[in-house]
Length: 398
Image (cartoon, rainbow, N blue to C red; front, side, top):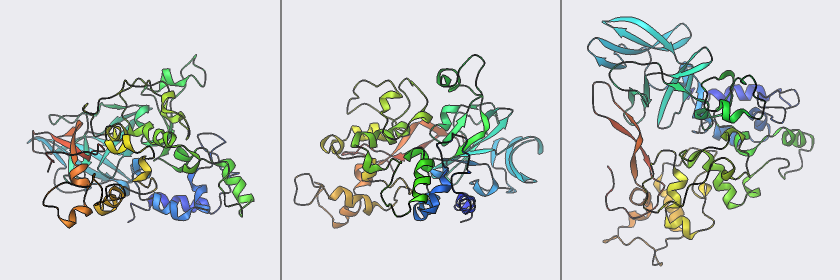
């Protein structure tokens, strides 16, 4: 519980005195900071404190780290003479290399990314960020190799670039190169390893999805009886394509050539301003389940036949994805009623089918993009996620 409420605690403390006027946000004077939202939106703020968006990135504090710390057993074994441990030293946690039973080098948990399915950790070296060699995976409830690393030797050289933060945080800046003016940042620094560690706004916060809020906060503090949201973007102000694009900036893959930073996206923008559009994707084209939710959904008949369908038809962006299959099945049944021709045709039909449409029609699939190797094994395991391509599947992965 302590882990879940970490950010809520410091946000609440700040909100007691913050009026938005004195607050200075690293992103600019038009931002109020998510702590300002609690004053009027406490229930939503408390709900958001638990979700995967908020935990998309976190500081590398002990209470935020998944997996065992200071366990007597090695966290990872490369060979009988080479191991890794996750250990606490003073006020920090480190991944420590052991050679022939003796510690030889250690690297601190400085930044964490993820919590729901897996968590990868990183360490700072000067103004660059590097991935630590092992990550924690919920599917095996244990440590295994981090994405991009193998099981032969603990390496600490995979650099984390700014674009990774654009879907795992609400802000990070790069030092401006000489001769490059402000506003020309993308081409020169977006793919650079140079990062300003003091400019991180952890997690996907309120203003990342609703836009800069300082004017909104100041107005409603001055006029608290006005219940209509002013100077802020809400879902009611967006058309269906804008709602889709708002999620697509991070949930439609990143294979298309990028035109400018995702950090520049504001609600209401078109994704075509940020990526060169792909040619029409065939309904049978293979699309990986990791990070491609919208592209998979577009391959579904449900999407092509329902012009109002979007991500928030099924998902509350302020909460974690619902685990109860009955919840999603009720949404499916709003169209696929038993009296219609598009109802489930499996025979013999069982009444409990109505409580679980998704396991058959949106099964879990393995990602070809992210794999890992557990300790003591040479066999790769693959990151598994539920596909968003709604369809009829002859074979379902177990």
